Each structure stands twice: as structure tokens, then as C-alpha cells.
Image (cartoon, rainbow, N blue to C red; front, side, top):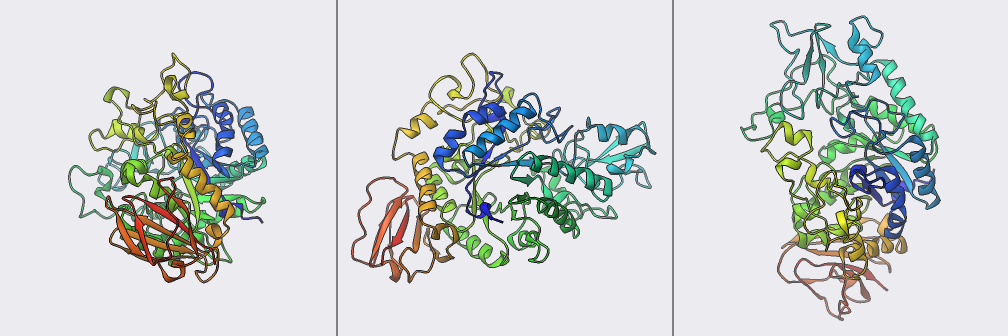
Length: 537
């Protein structure tokens, strides 16, 4: 096994928004294929593509009707085969989304299950009688609107479970036939050349065996996400979720060099359990979302690095991500001035980094006018700021119409953003000091300096808005020191002794001619500046 995913830089593509090749305003597989050379130029090693399976698009592809085909919006299965082949020609791995928790309510399996109580597929989903006093079987809530997660079916006189939209009924993985059918889907795509899967909401698949109520959340207040009225003790990260993890890993291990990535929003100690054990491994990469849900502050980031390094098991491998298709973009959350520091961190800390498309440019979340809102979460819970449209806007390729995403005369499915004419790939490639060129340079440095991939990672200090950490053994030449100034003020620090003599600055986030290190223990940092420093002797 090559463990290629330990060295890889993964690039996350939201397909509706990456490149529109056929002029309908929606991105597609041919569009992704058209832009593979850009991804190769940037230095990506793998692309992860959000769902492109046939779907009524109630939740933009996360409501699947056929896991072994491609929705016509995105192209055809022949287009996917061509994309895989062209990616592999460029030595790019392809990771797809796997949606195991639910299907569409238009999926043939659910239509059979719903047809009668004695249908052979009835137990493929969760069907329950009303509670003794009437109403839903328990107090579980939908994540999308905070109402009951149970939908009444008049025809058969029972409720079915939907953790998300009512159009997304939950699958019952305790039924061996479901397990067999779903793992066969993984095999189908592995045989077509797919290199791995990111497993959607993996930690929600196994529910409490007895369907016990969730505890009431004492911290919930009106105006908060209504689904947080209860604490999801019995609907996520249940004790036997590790059975599911093993089923996924065992299926992947039937093939060579495949990676499994589990989506889970958990504390780092809980996350570490999803690696399994050396004898019974689970996910290669349980997704670490801590930086997405934590303040971008030196003390906090340093503590997270130390905690993750302490909790990842010996057979495991860390991973980090700053943005995704569900949460505000990093440049919006941390501020434009800190966006570069975020990517210096992401590409130098130990572990596999995932770049969300457009973040390499410094794209921010785009305000969406009320009449342009598409996201069902926002439409079902207006005014709470839960909508994901602002982080899913089209990729900016150039300064032309629609930022090069769609041809002139076509209206993209979401607005491209007011600053697209200035902030796009073509313009950024012309500017050696752009954030895009900085990200490319950092990826190149990762490949040149092996210590940035497999060297030990040690936090030295995280005080006074300055984070310092090292990669490798600081007594040896080639060790790296990373210094990040999280403040809007200039700072002067004392360099660690190992870097006070015989060291060089490899990169400043300003991407200018930073002065050579003086033969002094003092180091000056400009506001919001990050430095990558190499020990030379």
C-alpha cells in the first residue's frame, strides 16, 4: 500500500459551482475535466467531488435516486469515466462522495418500502408506529427545520425517519440487505477507478437500537438553530457506529490504495476513536473540522494542534480543513488579512490538507439576495443565517462574463460575487504576490521539503497573538519553523535557539523580498504576516 493520501493535497470541488461546460448555468463533469490542468498547475494531488448522482435535487444531490449513475445535470457515466481517466493521466486521484445515511424518497428502494407494510424492502428504512398517546414515535428532530424527524405515511399508517429533509428517508443499515447493497455501490465505483470516498455524515448512520428520546438541551434559546432543542445523544456517534466504519473500511480494503474519509463534527478525542485500532482500522481520515468551528486565534489553534497530535493513534494520520460547502469561507470567518496565514498553517502543519475550491484565491462568502436563495436549509429556517448558498457560489476563472464560469448570456445558478472581476484565477496568476501564487508556492515547498509532510510537529508557543511550531528535529538541518502573527500589529519575537543562527526565510505570506535573517535572536513580523523558516545547518 502506498498511503498516497498521507502526502496528498486534496482539492474539494462543489460540482454545481466549479465550471459550466454546457452553458446551462450549472457546473458539470466536462467542466471539471476542462479545468484539470489548472489543478495540476496548482499542485493538487486528488480531487474530491461532492455528489453527482441522479437526484430530484431537493438537497442538491444529497437525495440520491441511483448511486450507480450520473445525473444528467452533470453529464453521464461516460463523462465520469472520461474524467477519471483524464485525471489519472495527470496523476490526480479522484474521490467521490458516498451518501449512506439516506436516499431520496423517489429512490426505487423507498418506493417499494413505502408501498405496503409487508413489502420485502419495508425494513430497508425506519418505519415506526405512532407513540402510545399518538404522534411521532420519539422526540428526534430534523436537522433542517427542527421539526419532528418522523413523517406520517397515511397509506401504511406508520411514520418513517428522516434526519434531514422529509425527501431524504434514512436507511436502516442494521438490515444485512441494506449493508450488502450499499457496500456493493462502493465496489461498483472502485472498479471504475475511483480512488476513495468521503462518506457523508458517517457518524449519523447508526441510530439508538431502542429509539430512545434525545435529552432536552438546557442551553437552547429561541433564535438558535431549532434542531438544537435536543442533544443528539441517540442519533449521532452512537456506540455501534464503529460497526459501520468497519464495513466501509473492509470494503475499501478489498482494493488497493483506496482512501476512506468520514464526515463527523466531533471533539478531537471522540474523532480519534473513528480511526479504530491497528488490528481493526476504521477510517483512514476521520475529518477534523475543529478549525471550522473554532475561533482563529493563536492560542486556540496552538491548543488544537497539540491536542490532535496527542490524540491521533500511532496507526492514524492527522488531517485539517479550513472551509467546506456547508460553512462560511475561511477568508470571511477569519478575515481577509488572515486568509494567507490560514493557508500557511494548512499546508505546513502535519496531516493531509483539504482545500475548498476558490479558497486558494481568497474568495469570501457571497451575500445572496432573497430572490436568489436556493438552499432548502435557508428556505425552511429563514432569518437564522443557516443558508449555505454564500459558500457555494461559482468559481472565478477570469474577468469575463460570469467570471468565466458560464458563457455570456447565461445566468449562473448563484451570483458570482461583486469582486469577481478583480479576484479570479487569471488575474491572480499574473501577480507573483497573489494569494493563489502563495498557495502554489507552499504546495511546491511541501514536495521539495519532505519534513513538511512526515516531520514531527511541535507547538513551541501560542502567546501574544503569535503561534510558533516546528516540523522535524530542530537539531538537524532542514527542520522548519512556522511563525504566524494573528494580530493587526507588528510584532517582535525571540527566535528559538535552534533557528538563531544558520536559518533562512523560505516564504513570507506577503510574497515579497523579505530580508534575510540577521545574526540575532530577534525576529520582526509585520501585521498579519506568517513566515516559513528553514534551518540550514
